[in-house]
Length: 111
Length: 113
Image 1 (cartoon, rainbow over the protein chains, first blue to last red):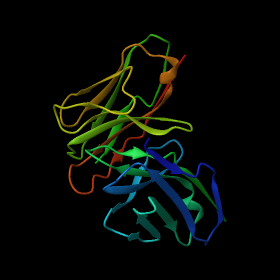
Image 2 (image 1 turned 120 degrees about the vertical axis):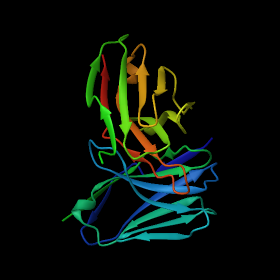
Image 3 (image 1 turned 135 degrees about the vertical axis):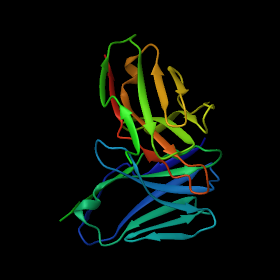
C-alpha cells in the first residue's frame, strides 16, 4: 500500500543550528513533492515544491532535496530560529490534481 | 485578498444533526479541496473539485457530500453527523498548472457529541 512517513517524534534543536526533517514514501512515483508549514490552530502554508527531475531546491534559509531512488526527501532549515518552530508536512502529488500528506514532524527551536 | 475563507470557525453538533461547512476563495483558482485533520492521522482528502461543475471523491468521502456552487465556493455537507466526524476541517484551493501548490483556509473545528 502507499505510505508517506515522517518522524512523528518532535525534533528539538538549538537556535542557530540546522534542522533536518525527513519524508520517506513507498509505492508512489511522484511527479512532485511539496513541503508545508503548519502552526497550531492554523491551516498549512505552502513552502517549497520540488519536481522529480530536480535534486535540490532552495528558498532563503530552506533547502529541499528529492531522491527518487531512495524514495526520500530531506527538508533543511539553516540558522534556525525560535520562529521556525512549527509542524512541517510533506505531500506528494502522484496523479491527477490530488495531494497526499504525511503526518508531519513538529520542530521545536530553543533559544 | 482574503485568500481562502471558511465558516464557521467552531461548531458543536449532536449525533444525527446536519450542517454545511462553507468555503470561498478569491484567487480565481480552478481547483478546490476539503480535508479533515485528526491527531495521528494527518490531513486526509474528503472530496475535491478539479474545476467548476466537477467533484470527485477523495480518500475518506463516506458521510459527506459536496457542492461546487460556482468557481469561488465549495461547500461540504454532513447529512447525519456522527462522533467519528469530530475533526478539524480544512478547505484549500489551487490553480491548475505546473506548480499546483495549495492554499488553505483557517479551518473549522467540529465536535459531534
